[in-house]
Length: 419
Image (cartoon, rainbow, N blue to C red):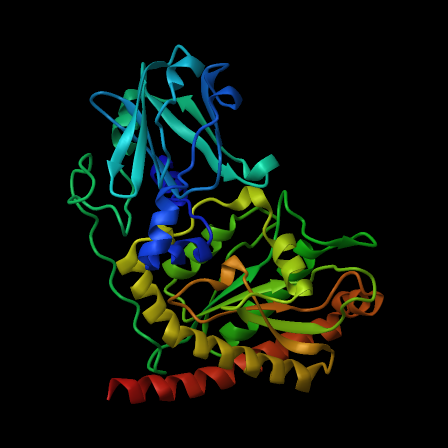
């Protein structure tokens, strides 16, 4: 369990910040504005039989957390924190911590190590933002485990940027992941459907209806429709549970998906929006209404775990941009086909049915991705449509037809590129 949690806890900051590493002048600015820990607002203390680590950071940073054995240690890597003048031993009030070490780990990364007096496993880990003055908070909670369980789960998580050559604590590099080949019609199309929100995050709510329930029901209908066409469909959630944004993308990658669809039915000011809209990733920002949706979809406490390739490594950034140069036009065409399908089947489109925004779930460089706002719960007309089984089926039919039409064209193009 801990290894899976450690993998999910590879945290990121905004891709726009990472792009700043691409010029010398911007590098210099980045290196003079490292995050710092506010010792007075931080704590490392016992929490019953558990250990609580609560660190106040001057700004969000990429990070990862894991344990090491012989001796037992908790390791937190940051990209990057300036520990100069910081004495974290002053805030340790925990019997389970016998020592604290901080310092630079490698180029662009610093490390905090807590020596553990006994075997403990990370149960929760997260980075929240939006505090006063841009403060970010990292919170970890560890619980006692057996020595056997600790030894089994100890070790750095697999990472694109940290292998045996880079991580002095690693025992070996992770085995490379086989590259995903673009679909060419020779196998079933693989589609990941992401019903937005869920669990502790119900999404938009109006007149006793919540977004999470509506989009889950439609997602299940869509998955069944795609399977009847012979496609493979994976849901990021099948129940009313909370799934972090970055985990949704991980599910798509694990399923080796060709397409990622995120379904929503949000709410804005009454009368401001109605009808279906299909979004692709914006590379130039978004309009005010779209930005409001981004803020609603992405609560600050969800900034945990996006791929560290977004953290500023120049080679990784170049590779991501190369992949996106191919993927983004495919996403655009997919969005256009879905809009056309919804128009034919429902006719209930937003006045601007094709928009772009900076949604995190659209940032995968390797999977064509779109976000579909099926309607707006803030609109009485949309609420009625979203609750109508016949309209839902029509919307499913439109999305299914869009995917089917796109897949044919995309397969032809894929075969041409191989020749």
